[in-house]
Length: 271
Image (cartoon, rainbow, N blue to C red; front, side, top):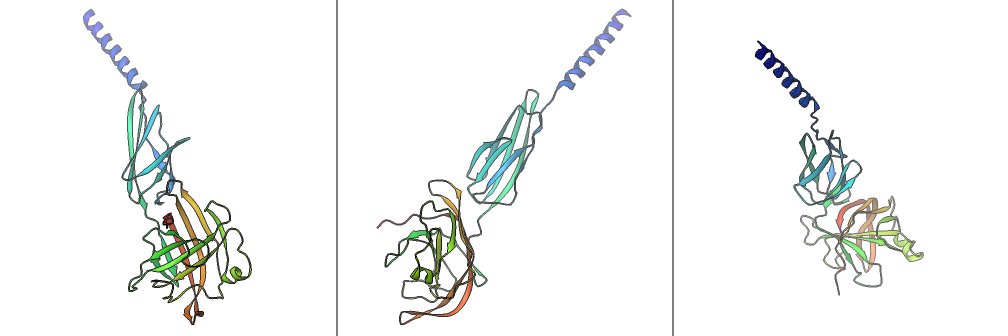
């Protein structure tokens, strides 16, 4: 009888000890959220942790190139490619570990020159270019392939800098202003030539007068690297369309244009 009572007491004691140990365990729970799920290449996306009971947390990224930095409650990630990435958080403490993964799809920038409602994709990086004649300013040249044309459409964007850096807001500066008044610091001119082989085969151009409805040129530094990445945006720029007759530009119409580009700019070719 005494042995049976002792066994029962030992059983209950062991049960209490095991229950106490189980109640004391506090494994962590992983959790995080993105500041946006509508990311574009070179965007900065904040990853905010909502993990609980974690003594330590790690964040791993797969699926493409990226750059990651610590922030107060998580990470900041710059996605350097258009791809689908997987972000995985692993949290641990003395009682265990937990893992959570989420995918985020990063889109390519919608780089395009729009003319009279038709969008022409910009598929190659623009290049800093010297003028082929005269002492005009260096310009950023976009070469855009257009179906049915033998040669590309060329857009020349001339940010009249004043002082560096390139990023900043530029006000419109017309050809008439260029001829009669010195260009103010941080101004710009946009010119475009269709089916451009050389300076002599101008099918249409923005060299005409009567330009109106201009918006600022806004240049933002998106990613600071060996070859910097910029956002370049002109929301509304109306150009005169026409042809040269005996070296005189004859305007035939006016059309609205806009330009958006996110990416690097190819440095100027060496002479």
